[in-house]
Length: 319
Ligand code: UDP
Ligand code: MG
Image (cartoon, rainbow, N blue to C red; front, side, top):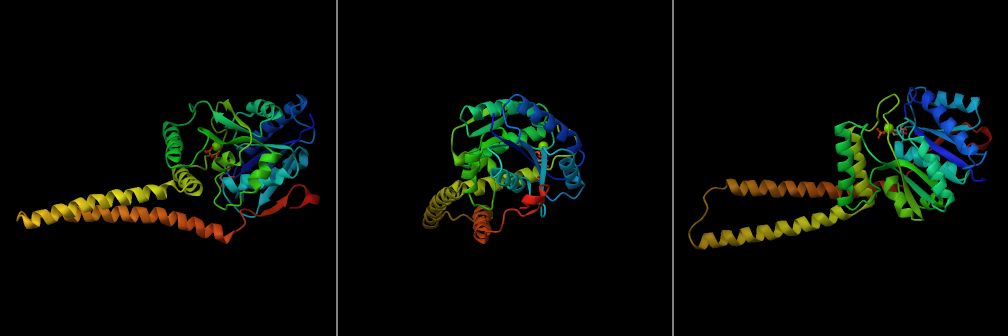
């Protein structure tokens, strides 16, 4: 088969994991080539996302030892989504199809065969979907599933239980390149690109080594970011809430006027203070949500670069 594949892998502080998983990826790529699912020109592309440890050193050594490995390093840590985008956009000009995967060995590389088969049958996007979450802790599983449900409720459509393990054809990547937003949430953007897509199910393993970079706080951040980047539904909910609240206060005012004229004036103001506090709270919450969107507008209008590639292991093709 003459289609070249780039496996794109973002890495942040992964010095413990890389030496183990790089061999695993290489073995997989060789077997895909041997099976004729992709061409001899296929590569494994590591994106070093401004790691503070020896990750970049390890990537450079890998690239020296075997030219199936290539690497690029970003000028500083830009986060998983931006690092992945940097890799995908760089790969887009050099290959026919990409598969993105985390470098910690959690995602089953053996699903790639199925990914490529679907690609050869005409799919432009193949989503890797976790069939179960047995290896995650109860807390992680609970928060992650809550994350998808909440996102969907808020109008951010994502593929359930799919992280960023996916195949994208050159054409789909070119579509993705036209999305210029700075607040990046690939899981929500890729379905918006369109094209024929499908899902492949796989089992997710435990992290081979090192620690997750997505503790609860970061995950909450990702959810908030995902929602406010993809949908304006929360703003509509606020309008609805405002409407309901004004209806309620209208009824309360009528009641107050009624009791005033019929002499049964309420003496206690506790309830009043309670209601005022409640309304104040709701207002603050709504302002906060609107503020989130204004913040988004602010960063989008600045049009700052989403990543800057500092160096690559392919010398002649710098940047
Ligand atoms: N990652 C990255 N930049 C970051 C954080 C993470 O490139 O700022 C990479 C990380 O090296 C890994 C992937 O993103 O390959 C997913 O991270 P992790 O495994 O920590 O997340 P989890 O699987 O726990 O959700
Ligand atoms: Mg992981």
